[in-house]
Image (tube, rainbow, N blue to C red; front, side, top):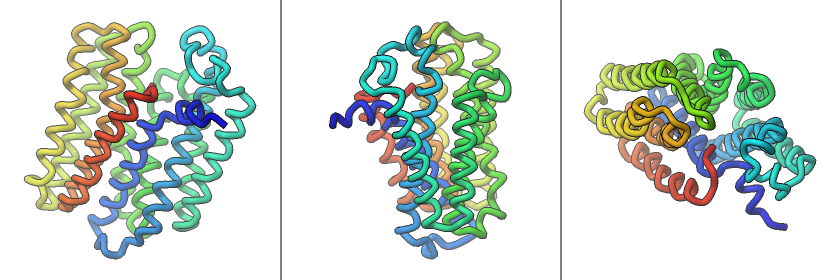
Length: 293
């Protein structure tokens, strides 16, 4: 069996960013609890859970988009006939099931969070993406839930830090808003608002780092993230055509890893932050082989 079409369907570069969400969540759990309490096997289970959840969500995105993709993106795996709709559906169900099962191996609470993420993903794939206001929020909830899934490695940490999941909701909402213009071009008002949401996320990271006494460790990571997302975004604002929008979206998605490395640096664990940052070249390399959007 040729597995490459199945890999193409799951957007491997994006899945790496989802794993970085989990690692960031684990670090955030460490804001209140020692990372020495963390079981590496449980961390692995949660990473595998997000592979299933994110991969399954992406697969169903393409399943629900099949008729539109036949016109706008006929080169994609399903409309091109490399994988049938029926096989893609089975694959997607298996991935989502794997995600929830792996989360259960950490705790029942993690499994419930994973189930909520899976439902949010399916709602977005089928309905949310077609709504200009609720769609970006829906997509953000998927990513925010993913961060909470990482935090759930220490179940009691959820009560302390669940509000922080609002930030990836803002960030992903910004990317989703930008991506609306990927095919036909965007408008500057939307891009400016997305830039504002980016600034909110970075500002809160710096504030939390300051409160925890780790501002000097976090500042370089936050600065790198700002540079990576705003360089293509300013070009898209200046000339909001499809290709420029696409580059801004790609940068936003891949830079999720840098944002998550920044969260880890906020915890004061510079080695862990650098490990997460090392996922960026892995994701970039995969993005050269497999589509990101």
